[in-house]
Amino acid sequence: MNIDWAALGSVFGVSLVATVGLVGLFTLGIVGLSKSATATAPGATGSVAVARTGAYVCFALCLGAVSYGIYMIVA
Image (cartoon, rainbow, N blue to C red; front, side):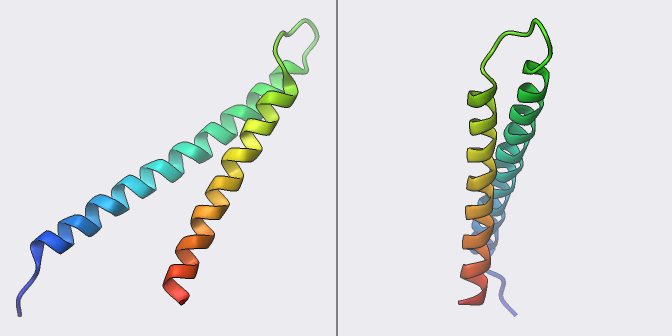
């Protein structure tokens, strides 16, 4: 049995970057939704629509990345 360590390291690196990227996008979405919730308080400044739209874009990118990953596995 011969293990290709370079290929294993490459897969590990890509998996790590993809995981950190998806978690970061999802976190930005959660932060955007929380900012839009606090911006509706009386006396708060900021745009609710921008925060909410940014959060939805982050969630859509996460959904697209997960869907693409599932497509790659199934196809």
